[in-house]
Length: 177
Image (cartoon, rainbow, N blue to C red; front, side, top):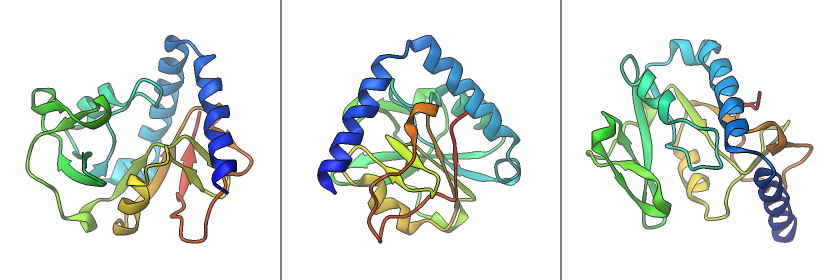
């Protein structure tokens, strides 16, 4: 299983390097426009998002846009866990683990109030299985959430099968175009 995951991560990484930054940005725009039309998104008050890395669906402008009308919660890496914090403005972000901009405010613990969780991944499949980067951060966070979970990825990250274990938390949906 570990070898299959490692192989899939390498395959996706190779495919990402074949894409230009402008292509990934354009793909991101389409994915996030689709998300904006989703009924769960439209009715959500509190949304867990992520502040994207270069090779993920770009969320920076999306976070800023929607933070004016919805409560946006972002993860912060604290040792081996993801701690959630409310997003208030770009001025309250600081570079954290892995070079990711993270909110500096107080921890957010009201997991049950999260209506929608937008989750990044290296790969997803039709069953909603998710392959992460291998550190297990989201594997430890997702069991705490009751929110509707939508994985977001580029089309080449949506594969036939992600090696998954029985306890892995599946996405309710995956958006990739």
